[in-house]
Image (cartoon, helix red, strand yellow):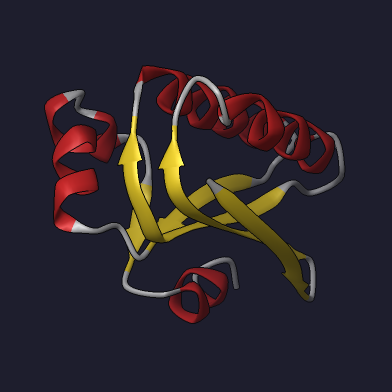
Length: 111
């Protein structure tokens, strides 16, 4: 897994590539915890290059959305590929996360 981060105004964006699983989830969790602790905790997770997510990755994302929403922010997903989207649909987490085509659209949705 690889990830890069950047910001658009007051929105933090993390781009995740490769496998987002139990071995790599702690790195992402740490970054998301730091962002969720800031006000307003607006985060876009770009999954365009993510090939796989497991339950650990889903748990990290759910924790992040809870923390961000408690602070008036949110976590939005973008670039969710069909194989990864299926995981969200099977777990019904597609009802929890707003999903967008790309990072620009997701960032604009915060306005």
